[in-house]
Image (cartoon, rainbow, N blue to C red):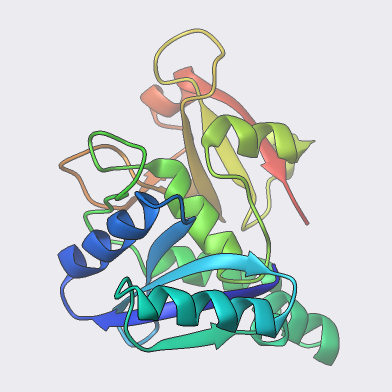
Length: 211
């Protein structure tokens, strides 16, 4: 990931969802996330330079699309920090990020008419750590390297065909011990599930790693 723009610091989830949706309607690749503080923020962009990110953010502020903003720089992402210092575990960081969403009624303000999207959770967990991941579950499946179920590691993604056949329609992030975090469907919250449960065993398509 390159430079990104962060805006907002909301205590109420709906406010972050609303801002994300208003940006998405203008073709801006925005996504909200739950910060370590528990507040909800919105991030967008993948700019090659700090100047490009700041210039566009200032334009959006002049148009009253956003208020104050913060530029996230590549060196601040976990993947860059770990590579630079040689300390830490990017897989652990990915899991920690996903865990922040547990219990949250995850609603995507853009494409999904139901306002709920499993691939948004995995995409955000990766992007917030500096790893660019495609938007939808099928693209995420195509982008990764295949990994056998018995070789899964924390942070890998697991995919399912929940509508029958082999067409990928659902994704979660593996956290170890046969468990993964996912956003089930509208009306439910982000939760932990077991790969060995009857439902997910039956619909399992495969796993992918990006590390």
